[in-house]
Amino acid sequence: MSRLNFRRMRATLVACMAAAVAGCFSIGLGGEGTALSQYRLTDLSPQVEPRATSIDRRLLLSTLPSESIGDTYSMAYTRAVQQRQFYQFASWTDRPSERVVNLLSQRIEARRIFDSVARLGSGVGGGLILNVGVNELVHDVTAGTARVEVTAELIERRGRNLVERKRFIASAPVAQENAPAAAAALSKALTTLLDEIVPWLERTADALPPPEPRPSRDGKS
Image (tube, rainbow, N blue to C red; front, side, top):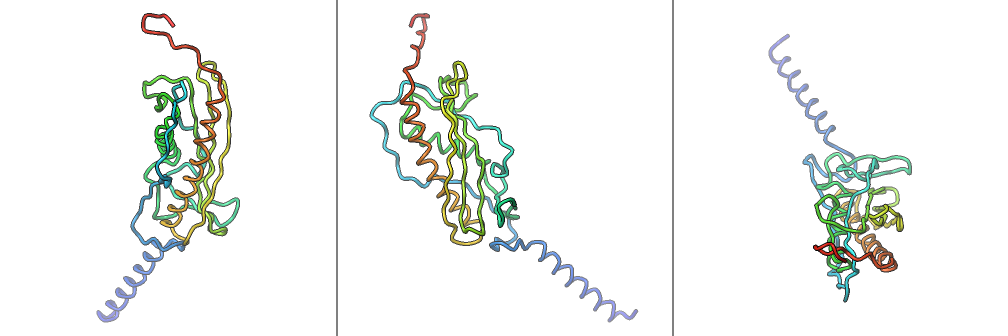
């Protein structure tokens, strides 16, 4: 083989390899490019007005165990009801259930619903536990919407009595078929859910009978 032919073959091979690599980096949805981008769910609601008087209870927040695709760091989208796929170059900075609990905690504290709000396992006591689980967090490409589904359950810690469990679902339109637009719409849908969860929690806690008196330091009520 002549040197000229060898050079031509090598140039052709390099061009084919470059085309193959370029094909690997194309995800066919949204054109995010090749760099991995991370997004964070955001509460878009304006400042919350606090209650005049807090409920005489302390609340602990916790995440519900979940095997759901919606509660992963990967950002999911779907083109069919029973199918889920992930954006190749987009992910969440926080696990969705952890982020939802953090945003919910901020809302509850701003509203001053309870005497105190803390995470379960933080060493702070509390008579009520609010468990939160993310069932769905997906960009529905066919419908052009972002959908969020969350389950919340309020439990009285003493006796482990389930006070109430409720599922919340919200959606928001997605402007474009890409990860940035999906993340923005999912934050909008989540804000709608927070607008529903906080009043539900407040009403449910308000309807509970007064808690038993807390013992004083000397052992007396």
